[in-house]
Length: 97
Figure (cartoon, one colour):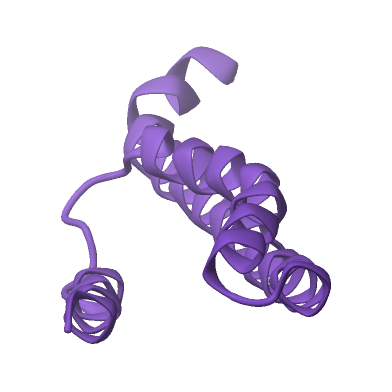
């Protein structure tokens, strides 16, 4: 039951309303979680199913989930950088000219 409710809850958190301000820490956390996701997938597959097949399926699932998390984190960092630049630009531009 928890295996069904937890992913749905996390999906609502991720898909929810956009952040009101830039938060680069969230993007960094997603990148680190994405890098560690294949290892977590391998362990979950090994202990949750048949050892060889579960390990292979866990590795594939973990790799794809990790790629998604890294891509999401990178895009979030990029958009956070743009929003931070947009907030700082009015104060920095007078000093540039």
